[in-house]
Image (cartoon, rainbow, N blue to C red; front, side, top):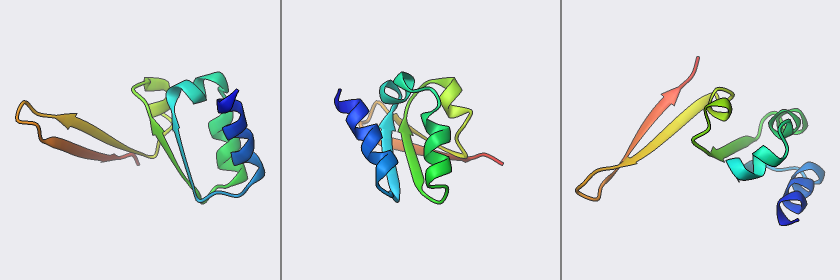
Length: 79
């Protein structure tokens, strides 16, 4: 229920940034299209490992950790 409430709120109120995980987006497969239509200049951040969602992104940040406890970020802009 909470996920649906958050989606409804995002659709009703204008937003600059929308952050979601793939569990929320999997419940509504077309929500990315809807969010981009409603607010095309907004930033949509998705935390996911699902390839189908990654293919729809214009930029991918890959976070990985090393054995020494440091975190590495790889920025992959898509053309």
